[in-house]
Length: 253
Image 1: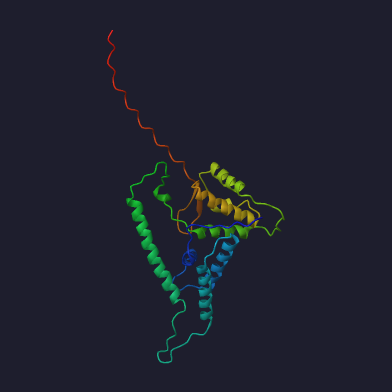
Image 2: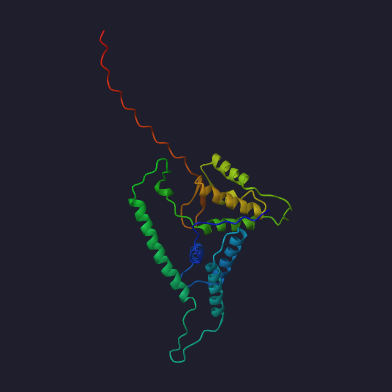
């Protein structure tokens, strides 16, 4: 099967991936287990390559940085002969980068929220959620993580030469699932796939449906389950009432 290249207009950077891994594992940003994070980071890069996602050079630079920090932590700490203190923590620069990035991203998000609050645009037919159904913005890495879980569930089957995995049947499958339920779990979209290429095609189908604004993905809490919803059709605007015709003068007999 011909490989598909996926290009996303908005793609989170390597620090976003690090923050995602730190939050997912509930780690202390000031005491990052570099060996664990480096291993998981490289696993995600492998999954992204399997999906033919275009990986920017900065992801590879961060991978190199993590491995350098990991190597430095394995070396004996140098102790100052006068003060008896050890040298600086090799993770310090990485922590500073994450903190600074979070500050700028928080400020950017605040500005976006203010813009959304004050713009004079209203949509009809948008979904209305209760307080218990308020959702968080999703990161691309949440979808990559679902693909990783789907890969892990696959049987050790040998790929059949000439077997194809067309996109349209996967799109139809997702829409059929949503026609029977209000929502489906992201993992359920991949549940019936038995080959890596089938999982990849499902992933592309999800992205295509999101791009077409036919579905939406939501998460009710950080690191919680991801639900896929059909996007409601917009309600057509009611036609303007016709103006009453001017009264006619009675015909004189």
